[in-house]
Image 1 (cartoon, rainbow, N blue to C red):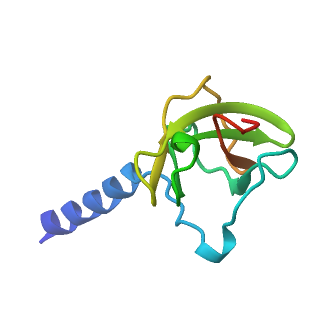
Image 2 (tube, helix red, strand yellow):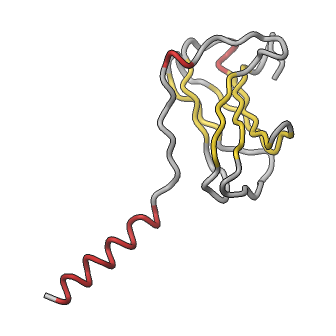
Length: 125
């Protein structure tokens, strides 16, 4: 009996250590169209950091416009700290951003802003 209890405790400790950070998508009515001109050429979300490094960010996009090109930038206050480009492969799909222009050490508990913008022709990104 002691062996079974010990096994359950070890398994209970091991599983939470491998779970990555996950944010549920925001509600549809919170999203919207953006302008191609500053200062309204992006949508953003503020996140309180609980990670060490950023591997991937995804954006759900509607109609594939301008070839489906998007750009994401992570801001620490008003300072951009890293960015990436992504391409939408079809309308109403997830756009993945995985190839970052630089690696950044994030501070846990700090709030960062993630800004998404259209990229390409007629765009400011």
